[in-house]
Image (cartoon, rainbow, N blue to C red):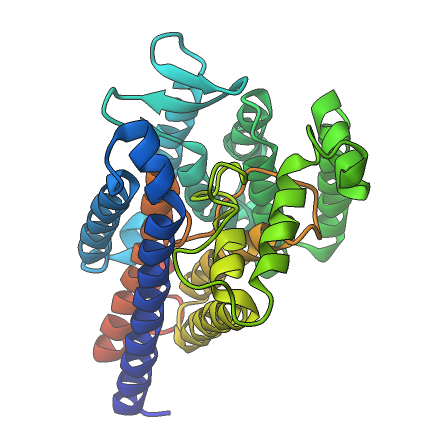
Amino acid sequence: MNTEHEHHEIDRLTRYFLITLAVICFIGIIMVYSASYIYAKDVYKNSAFFLIRQLTFMSLGAGLIFFLGRTRFAFWYKFAQYLHLFFIILLILTFVPGIGAGVKGASRWLSFGFMRLQPGEFIKYSTIFVALNFFENFDLFDRKEIIKNCVAILLPLALLLKQPDFGTFTICLILILFVCYMSSFSRKYFYSILAVGSSLAVAALFLKAYRIQRLLTFIDPWKNPKTTGFQIIQSYLAFANGAFLGQGLGNSNEKLFYLPEAHNDFIFSVLGEELGFVGVFGVVAIVSLFIYLGFKIALQIRSRISCIIVSTIIFTLGLQWSLNMCVVLGLLPTKGLNLPFISYGGSSLIANFLGIGFILSAIREHKRSLDLGLDENYNEK
């Protein structure tokens, strides 16, 4: 494939990729307002309260994409450990009284008065870079470097369990295993890490009584329909009410204080009720197209490092979409995971835009390599 054709192909894929992202974000804006306006009117006396905040977060995210898309990807890969350290410090600060904000017994947020920040949303993306650097260069590290890198990768996992945030912990653990598999790391050691990681996840699942209760609720939500099973049963009802064509945009009954987190973790249930199977299928289709285009872009990029990181970022978003949809459909135990670019939430939205910004930076670096005639290892030079 000649350089001009490669330029044209990556530009075409990037254009469709960003158009698809814009469509998903537009769906998110519509659904956040539809799912929240009654609650916002009752609690904040402003039906557009969450809509305005979501638009603000999206504007910040768009600015972040614009900035990162004009930076050198090699810079972020080289100095990712410092960004990772910054996010680890933010995670630690969530436990500091007066700075950390606890909600429902979980210390996952930093309070800045006018807004709250959830560092766990950002740690996912810095972990990708740090883990890949570790696994790719494992044979070059001495024992001291190996220990330092293991601490950098595993410390956030311990902090996430302490918060507790089992959902983000699970996602980070899966990402580490995914990066390990994609890297040049020894297959023999990989399967050992896979066994240890799986054991760690299972042990963490049974470490807290409330997680066991969620598992039991997943098995039989009707056993406690007014307590632990209430939320998922309301989600079932939302999809049942939606049927094939839905009840119409804005006409959800479940968002009328029946379904908790209607504009956040369970926004897909409101979408299913208002737009029915047609709407659900449409969202799944556009999300699937986004993931497909993302992986196509990754395969176009010459640099192996950039290809792996772009693939992992797309995998991260796809994993979160899949987990959220499975949870609200009752296919997985209930867990606080949002729907990327659709659910309300500043931290998750900006963090996911951060991931998109890294992808655009990798694309820019790829195009630069085509112009300069660099080989596939240009990121590592």
